Structures are given as C-alpha cells and as structure tokens.
Amino acid sequence: MSNQPKLHNAMWPGLVGKGTDEGQEPPISLEQMLDFTVAAEVNGRKFDGVDYFLFLPHTDPDATDDELKAIADLIQSKGLCVGTLVAPVWPGTVGDSAMGDQEAKDKFLTAVQKACHIAKVFNEHGVRTYGSIRIDSAEFGVDQWREDPQANTTKIATTFKEAAKIASDHGERLAAEGEICWAGMHSWKDMLDLLEEVGMPETLGFQADLAHTYLYLMGYNAPEHALLQEGYSDDEFWAAYKTMTDKLRPWTIDFHVAQNDGDVHGAGDHDKTGKHCPADDPNGKLDVVACSKYWLDGAADRGIKHICWDGCMFPNAMLETQQTWNTILDTMIKVQDAHGWE
Image (cartoon, rainbow, N blue to C red; front, side, top):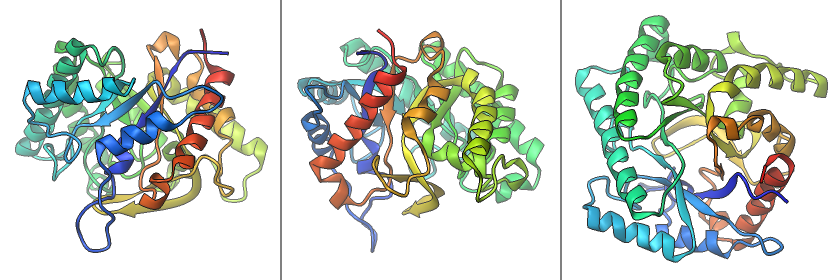
C-alpha cells in the first residue's frame, strides 16, 4: 500500500460556476466542503488535505494575516492540510488577462503576489508544507489570441516570467493549468510552446488535469494539433496519449485526477472547457487509473507530493451527496495504489 502522493480534494467545485445570478446555483461554503471531505472514507482510508481557491466567498484575497490564520486553524481542526493554492488571476477577481495591456498585467501580477503572501501565512502556520500556486493566462477564449499567435504567446510568457520571479522570491512554484478555454494554453502544442518560451522549469511548470487534457487530444480549440479523431481505436488512443504526455510530463508539477465524457461545458463566467464527470460516470472516456500513470511517472523527482481530485461544475445536489465524495476518494486511492510510492 502506497502512502505517497498524498490525496487531496478540491474546494473550488463549491464555487466555480456558482453564483447569485438567475439560473445559477448558490456557492457551497468552505466549511461544508471541508466536512464532505472529512466524512469521506474507504476501507479506513481518508483524504489527507485540500487544494484551495483564494477568492470569495471562501477567502478574501485581502484578508488580514489573523483572518488567514483562522482559516488555517479551521482546516487543520478537520485533520486536513493545504496543498496547491489557486491564485485569483481572472477578470472579476483580483487579476486580469496575462496578454492584456499594462494595467491588466499589473492586476495579474498583483493576484500572484497576494497568493504568495497567503501561501507564506499558511506555510508559517504549518497547515501547508507542499504544493504550488496555480495560474493560467486569464484570457477567456482563443479568438483574440489567434489575431497574432506568436506575439500573444510572447505577451503571456512575459507576464508569466514576471509572475515566476515573484513566486521564486517567495520560495513558491507556479503551475500553469492546461485547459482549452485559456488562450495560449488551449492545445497541448500551444501549452508546450508557452512553457518553453517562459523557460523557467524550476519555478513555472504545468498543471495537468485528466479531463482537460483529454480535449487536448481531440484538438477541440486547435484542430491543427489534434492527435485523435472521433471513432479512434484503443491503440490509437494510447499512442496519442503517450505522444502528449511525453511532451508535457517533464513540465508537470501538479496533477488533477478527473473524468471526462468528451463534451464541453460552461457555467457562469467560466468559458466552455473540458467537462468534469463523476468518477464512476458510465460515459467517461478515460481509464482514470491507467491514464494517471503517464503523468505520474517520475512524479516524486519533479517534486510532486500530492494529487488532487477536480470536479468543477457538478450540480449542488451531487456535491451535497456524501457518496459522491466516497466514490471520488475510492478512485484517488486506486491511483495512489497503482502509481504511488512509500
């Protein structure tokens, strides 16, 4: 039985796609999300910690240190730790587009600065001893990027380099999330080009999500980079999967276990992206345990100490059902047992 990497649950499914606008479901509180996490148990095994989005209503990014310590106390009181933090880099939170004008870039960098400060408070408190800070380009959709792909990738890379310098000064690493809705990061090839242009692997790496990277294979927002076509065979799938992961795995410092049914989904202000499905969804396209191996090969050498479940934009009825979390934990344990280490 492996005990590494540690198993984390994401807190942001209680927030992403939720809201107070007509047709939206209300957010689920941090304490509720923590309680569902703590209550999950499979054969005596439980989650070790949580990954955490640094924005309201779970966290005010401008909270005082005392308020942040109170959050840390709450999480620790549940027997959990904190791993990766999600910086509030998007328009409407603290940040703005990494390929925008100087004002937008300054907002993006401010979001990273605030995330690094919160990380420092959590680290010094003792609730956090590992994990990265997650970012993306915060540029929804790819239309504007396509107007001048090389110049716009360079703009994002320049912002990311400055963000990586902030992170390095705080002893943190940034993980850039591969997802088809983020301009310049919307295909496996464009993601790789961006990582290479930043060229700071010790400070800025890749955050791989099984659901999102499945749509990289299909070339959903970049048909020219598709590695698979509809109706593919098993042999074609695994050959394509190896091609993609061989390119991105060396950069991967943060990993999300997830399922995908091949559709795209969007809710609230979140643009269409890879649809997360229940871990046991009969329409899931992925052998989650087998796919995880490709990303976790050599994970310890890249500093990965935990993996996290991601199930964004599930309906509240599903999120508020305890069996949902037990099934997720069971899947996480299978990944840990198959590909973990002591």
